[in-house]
Length: 423
Image (cartoon, rainbow, N blue to C red):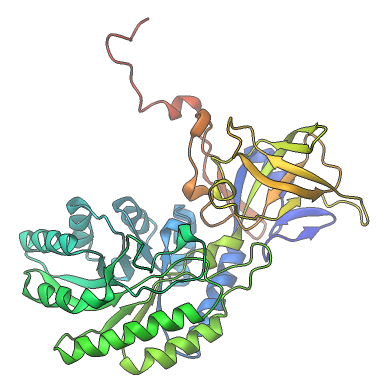
C-alpha cells in the first residue's frame, strides 16, 4: 500500500514511524495517509479525463471523518451522502452543496428538507412514497427538487451478498421496468424535476461485465424516457470499484472509463460516480498492540487490544486484512500460524485464523492493512469500549482528527431516572 513504507525495519505512515503515533495516541488507533488518498484520487480522475470526464462524489459512508472528507474535497471531490448526518458532515467539511448527491432508501421528510435547504445537486429517489414525500416538502418550500429516480437494473454484481444492491431481491431502487410509469408520475407532482437517472449495483466489484450489463440497460432506459419527452441530462452510475485486500484484482479504471465512454457517452449526459472504498480503503491502517500470546493444544492465539467493535469487517463479512508487524522481522525469520483475536466477549471477535506470524510477543505493534474504508465508520462502543482515535498524516506531520473519548464523555448522554438516582 502506498503511504505505508518500511524504513529501517519500522513501518511508517508516510514519514512518521508508527511507534511514534502509538506513543502519542495510545492503541488501538486508525491512521490515514494524505498521499495515498491523493494518489487514489489522481488515478481515478486521470482515467476518466482521458475518456469521459465525470463528477466524482465521494461516498461518505466509507469514511466520514471530517479531515478525510476535506482532504478529498480539496482535491475536487463532491460527496455522496446517505443520511442527514452525512449531509451535515459533507457541508461542514467544505464540500460545495452543488457537488452533493443524496442517496438512501429511507430518507425522512426532515432529511429531505435539509437537502433542499442546502441546495444540493441532486436527490436520488428510491420509491414512489419517497417521491411523493419529497414533492410535499418541496412544494411547502416553494422550490423545485432536482431528482434522479434510482432504478434497480436486476444485475448481479458478482460480489458478496451483503454488499450487492442491484438485483430484484435487494431493497434499493425501483424496478427498471416500472421506471417509465414512475417518471410519468414524477412529471405530475409539484416541486419535482425528474432530470436524472441513478443506479448502484454493489461494492467491491472486480469485473467490468456487471457494470457493462447495468449501464447498457440504463442507457436503453434513458433513450426510452427521452422519446417520451423526459429531458434526462444526468446519469448517476454509482460506485463499487474494488481494491486489493488479499489477491483480488482491483477494478480496471481505464477499462471502466472506456466502458462509460462507449455505452453512455453518446447520450451526452453529465455522469456522476460515487467512489468510496477505492479512494480511502488502502489509505488507512488500524494499529493495535499485542496483549497476550496464548498457547493452547489445539491452536495458538494472539490477543490484541483492537476488537470487532473497532474493525467489524472480518466478523461481519469474513473479510481479509493483511496483518503487518510494525517492526519488520529479520529476513528468514520463521513464522507459525496464529489466530489473531480481540478482547470482546464474542467468539466472532476474530481478525484472522491460522495467520502466519513471526514470533509475536506481548507489547508488539501490529497493523491491519486496507482499513481506511468501513473501519472507523462502522465502529461501535460495544463492551463499553471507546471509539478509537483517528490520525491523519501528511508527510512528516500528523494530527489527531478524532480523539479517544473518555468514560465520562461516553456516558454524558445517559441519565438515571429519579427512582434510581442517589442509590
